[in-house]
Image (cartoon, rainbow, N blue to C red):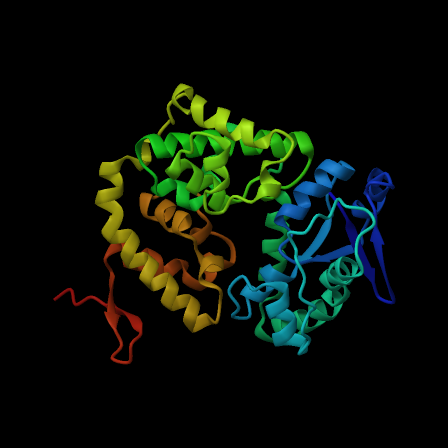
Length: 343
């Protein structure tokens, strides 16, 4: 962590974690104080590492916005829509470990938190009117309950969507670079994308540069990502890729199974997207591709078959998968479910 921004009703502080022991902040995190954050997932991991704990109570404005029709909005987008405020532009990829921080850096950092409480109030009012406040609270609790323990570096590639499309040696090289990045981030106690961006992992794996000069020419690779021996480490990872253990495959997700389920997954995905549109929800909040695949496979306790999702679309999806209803066009560019004629 390079900087901690904290705002409250009538004040704001920018805390330098290079000069202050953040473990003393743990008492606040574990109190009954409600923490309002935006896109909190990565920040929760940082809190775990820096403070030894994470907030007990969380309201994530990005998550909450998904329940009022916005699809994973940036903080800038949310402030403009809800408050009519334009946040200052800045280079979020600037060197936040440099001291002293510049005036523009401090202004940019302060803007990340100064409007969060106002956003919270606006979103809570909207969620309450729509009867969705408990849905949002449940999602925030689920985010807090996610496992944020040490991650297996050899599984790090799974969190980079583009890597899944790679084949052959390129896939192996991407696994190796992603694993190096995961270890490096853990050693340096920084987010993985500050070590090496996702785009760089993919393009390096595809281009397979032979030396540092070629590595610096790869799309997505910036000179700051290759400092302090990182260039040599990336090249070593590429060279060692062939020695990685093979990827274990889930027998439930074999190529044959995926082919057999493709039509059902496509059909359910179409209905989930339509339902999200009708309900004014972020489609990925209602159900991700993985959620839909798990439902089609008939797994127990899937997200689409539990909690608020079961209440709003569960019975319709059960009827669709069982063949009791069919998906049809409504004549206006949308989709609807129709009872099948059993006569």
